[in-house]
Image (tube, rainbow, N blue to C red; front, top):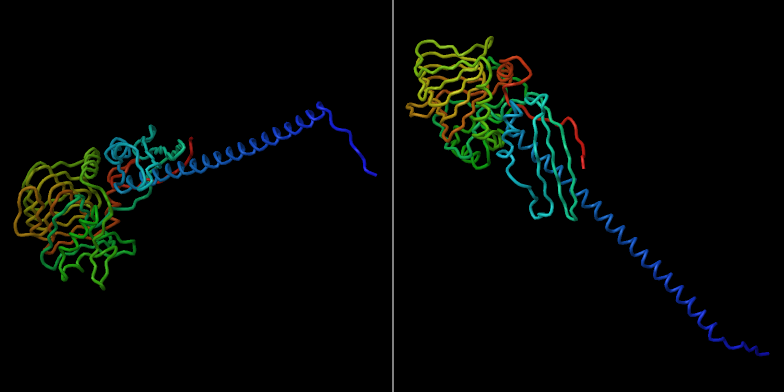
Length: 389
């Protein structure tokens, strides 16, 4: 039997419509809420990603800065690094190639309690969505590592000439008596950049290339030990010299001519010798130990046996037949055990010159003056790391 339902009254139809509308509103609210939560999750994820990217940018800034510092080395952190930071690091924020939205900048400060040996690097990293992170590390001097090479060329462009086949430049380690050791080698000749390294290596003929040995040397194929290390530049060398000349006990020699036998320190009593004359001539037999700093030309007509570190701020010529002003000419026999750094444009090596790297000799130099500091540049190492924002 067919059942008949009574028709809905108008108020009942309105009630059903209201309930349906209410359900639709609730559904829309829920859908909108879900969308909002999803958008919030996406935004939160994006901020987390860019925050991490900002952190990575800050860490890249720290790595860049530490590499710059350690390419120079540190005698006094305050004078060598903190006071010269704009010159070393440059101005403004740094960015990555093809990723200009990711930047960093770094500030440096010497430790107030120990400005010679400790300092702080603070790096600010930035990424899209205004992400920003700040990382700070504490630095302290590391252990003795020695010079960048048996000969270090601090200029960004160098004219190198090698004459004869009797000279010897060796980055393999020797003791202070000239005997080989098992310590790690350094380059025979270290340079600031690839261009200088290529030019120096190219100025050695096939008979001379095996006279420059040390790190990277190969007999087959014949490859001299000439390596870019991005070591101290000319301005860095000037600062290092300023540090050394501020050391107590520097022996200044204003005269230009030295005749007979001359002693510039001994292994038992090494000294810092500072030659200030524009044209120094050593006409007899000279020996020395420690650090020898020459501002102008140095002509050695006799014999020089030196243990330690020689810094020539002008052009350097070893064993030639003539000399000009503002050059270093070694006309007799030169045996240098340690390291020779030159800061000017020209270097000429020939005759019977011997420049052999000697870690022991540089360690001797390092301890000329007792105390908390050091005289041979050292790297800095990270002692603590903290994200401060």
